Structure formats: structure tokens, C-alpha cells
Image (cartoon, one colour):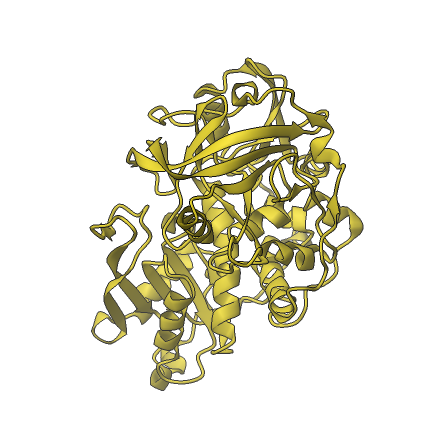
Length: 476
């Protein structure tokens, strides 16, 4: 049985000051990675166009990579912060399987009191040690990742924006393509709160000020990918580390920036303006189509004295970023209704968005299918959900496949949900005529032992536990 010592419904355990710092400050994070042997340094000069991503791809899933010398830029680049779950766990100071529970534990107190742990808004901070005299995005080492990408992309930066109707602050991540020294075109997925904010501003004929924060630790970054939480979402990171995450005043506009960011790009979303964006190598492993999308004009750039630029590859890093947060959100939502859910995993093969495996205590007939329905409700991007018993290791694809092979009967255990909302980046989703969403037939698979048949027929074979250190064994 998969066990987790952390309380799944109580408050998060307090983190140390060092852990809190590296979860906010990318520089402290890099120091930790270097000190613990989890960082590769590329000392040769590399081109940010294709070459940097090509090298990074060779290390994907292993240690993080720091490119020390990038052509035509004075700043190094970090890749791989989230492509290895064990490293992510080390940064959080917990075993990697506990990370979703750390996130879920922060959601409860945030939802209970969104005014708790208010952030300071500083005038001077590490992120504005240098105020660039001219706005020129070409001076930043923003990469061109895949061979057919439409341009240089910011793909890991946190966008802070205020709700024009309430003034509440929200944070999210969007892919943003550089189209000029002071201009970006970018995608807003359907259902994202930034889309609502832009629409409200456009109704007034106004631009929407934002700050684009590059180079943050994992706490604010992971919070930015949590789905559909709206105003005040940045404060979840406060509860995750046990103290407020400082903000700072922008040079332009009334939207703050993260005080510990490496770079801050201050911009405004232009009302009613659409320009071409993409293709881009996205989370699915396919290129997204070029189309007219939203536009930002950049008004100011500030940075640290010696900043490190942060980028990600579309692949395991995105799958884990979305996976950790979706696992936390799903567990938090489903556990509130069905206490028998024990763990959630979004496997890499599901691209972090489209497949979930849920582990459930088998206490009554039909509980697997009930959990499957609630899981789909909790995270609408999912296309497939598999429910398994507590004796199945949901992180082991062989074990999950074994459960499907020996405990799943399509006649009774297959759920088909046609016409359900799908994620627009999934190429199998049928897009609506207006392009603002789409549908797909979702699949639920109840691979749990039939409740009425629990007993010897489904008892797993077990062997004696042994400690190989006690034996004299010769290895060739």
C-alpha cells in the first residue's frame, strides 16, 4: 500500500528558512542544486536559437542545466528546474511523492482566509537593482526552442495582473512570442482568468497592465499553474512556505512584480489588438498552429545586478509543473467529497493534462466510478481517468497496466462521457466554431477489484521482505 506520512487534510508542515528562501529565490535554488550535485554547468558558448534547447533536451529528466555563456547576451540561462520530480522534492525538502500534498495543504488555509499573510510591496528590491535605460527584449537570452517555432519565446515567466472589476491579483503562465524589441504576442487558453481580465478591460477600451516575472523559485511558479482559482491566487505561495512572498512596485502601471524575480518585464495588453503568434512546440509534443492572438507592449524592464534567465522545455517539465498542481487540486477537491481517495498521479504519457491515475480505498461498490466522475469535475482538461486499489503503485506504469489487465472489465467498468469539455491544445479535441473551446469523449476505467469479489481470488502474491546487506553476495 502506498503510504504518505503527511496529513492530507491538515495544515502544511512548517518549512525551514533555507527551504523557504530557495522556493522563492532562484539564485538560492541554483546554489542548492550546485551544492547537492544536482546541477550541470555548460561552460561552452551556445546559441539561444535552437542550440541551447538541443543541448538541454539531452539532459531532460536528469540534473538541471545552467548555460553560463549565451551568444549575444550577458546573462546565463537555467533549464530543467521541474523535469525531475526527485529534484523538485529535494527543493521542497520532502520526498517527491509528497509535493502534491504540500500544495494541497496550502490550499485549505488560503481558501479559509485569503486575507491572511499579506505580502509587502517594496519600493526597492532585488528585482529592480538595475532599471534598463531602453526597452530591448533582444538583449535578453530568450531562446528559440524547437526547429519550427515561430520565434523567441518566454515560456516560464509568471504574469501578474489585476482583475479590472475587483482589483484582485492573479498569477498565471502563458507562452509569449517576441515580435519586436518592445512587443509580444501570446496565447490565452479558454477559461483562464487573464482572458476575463483582458475582456473586461477591452469593454472599457482600456489596456490591461501586467508584470512578467522571470526567474522565480518553485513556490510562486507552481502556484501560477493552479487552475481556476482567480483573485488572490498568488497568496497560496505564502501558505506553502509559511511567510509572505514579497512584491515590489512597478516602474509603470499599478500591478506589482515579484521582489525576488531575476527579470521583470512591465507591459500592457493592448485592447482589441491581435497579431500572429506560433507555431510553438507545445505540451502535447506537436506544434500549435499560427493564428492571430493577444498582444502586449513592453514599457519597462528591470532586473537583478547579475540575473539568471529561466526557461523550460515543452515536455517533462511542463508535465510535472501541471501534474503537481493538478494532482493537488484534484486531491483537495475529491477528498472533500470522497475521503477514500488516497493519492493522485498525472503520468508523463498524459502530457500532464490529459490522464490521471487515482488510488482509492475500496470500501463499497461503485466507489471507483464515483471518484472517476469527481476527478473529471475537478480538472476539466482530463481525457482519461483510471481508478485503482491501494495495493497498486500509481507511480509505476507496469503496476497500473497490471491492474487494468486483471481487474478491469469493459462491460461493467468502462465509462464513456461524450461531448465533454476538452483542452484546446489536445489535437484530438474537436474545436468549437468560435475557437473558444472544444469537446472530446472522455474515458473512465475502473480498475479496482469488484467490491463483491474482494477476497482470495484477488489477493496479490507476496514474498518475504529481506535486507540484501545481510547477505554475502558477489556481483559480476
